[in-house]
Image (tube, rainbow, N blue to C red; front, side):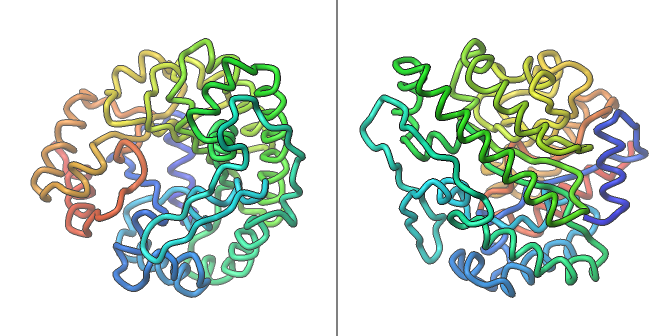
Length: 346
């Protein structure tokens, strides 16, 4: 994002009021390759040039939007699990999948901490960012975020979601040991990204599995580990994405170090605000698939207008978005309708 966009984002997270709402969208491989019309998902992953050109096309087409994290180098859900030795399944035009390494077990596996400098896909992610940095900065943008999947998300890919959730209950000691190893790895991965790219001043973690558990388990198995990862570097924006159930984690976001929360559209701003408190900025919240992707421009405008009305003209610590990342199929016309309605006065 540009320097002005970054300064505006930080200002909103800190509680500044703007003349018009800030609009930001989590944008990555589910949306960008299909929207660009120039590449398959596999091309997007496999070519530095295709990846860069696709991201450049997005920022040029929507200069008034903040894309989060911006120029995200990723391989779907596979990046971090690959460091632990998962088998990766690739498709031409579908998202890849990381197969579990502890299939069928309800006991947490004993893990060794991978070295993010050498393990799995991580060196390729970092090299892509370092090599693309001059072109990104020539466009007036900079890489602002270190990004990773969260500890529970990674654990669910290593074990399988059901098996991991069962292990939390049947093998809590082993689960904590596994999460401790994953978290130590993530701390090193975040630090490595920040050391390689000095413009990084934000941390973005994505962990929908936090939305699958109750508040007691969030406190025991999520909050302390999220806090460690968010605290790995000194940062101004600590963005947490969980578009599954957000009610259990919302009251604990501050304790985890989160100051910007992207939550699911099933919850209202008022509901999350009452739980998260006034200090956590909120990113949302129209339905991403059924409205932003599948709706008409007029329906998008209606939902944005309703979102504005529900906020009762108080958009302090609010960034207008959808309730989750940009899904496949969001057309240019719908994003323009969103941005236009958000900017409309009155």
